[in-house]
Length: 113
Image (cartoon, rainbow, N blue to C red; front, side):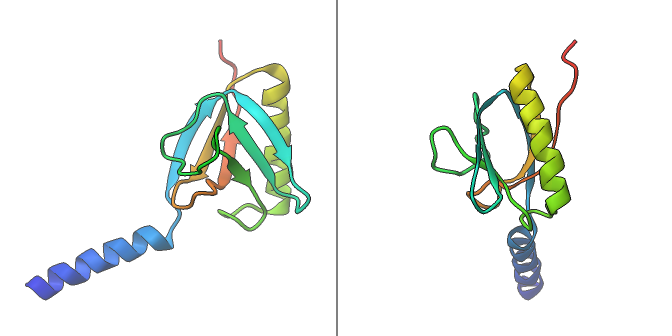
């Protein structure tokens, strides 16, 4: 019985590290910072406690081949971020909280009325 319990606990722990854990966060963008490698860093006016990035404000990264993001997706997501920033609207992101890079996977902007 103890061996089965240990096996189940081990599998649960491994699955937590093997798959990205997703968290939703909504705020206004503070900064958009494109990098030379094609990735983009976003910072927000309010941070998510689930992002373990040490930056102040915390950095949320959008990068090809990280958290399932393709080049096409990066371009689409980046354009939504630019629209939210330029209009001052809230942006909702879905990011991976299993790494300190807080890789963004998707986002949405919606009418606040």
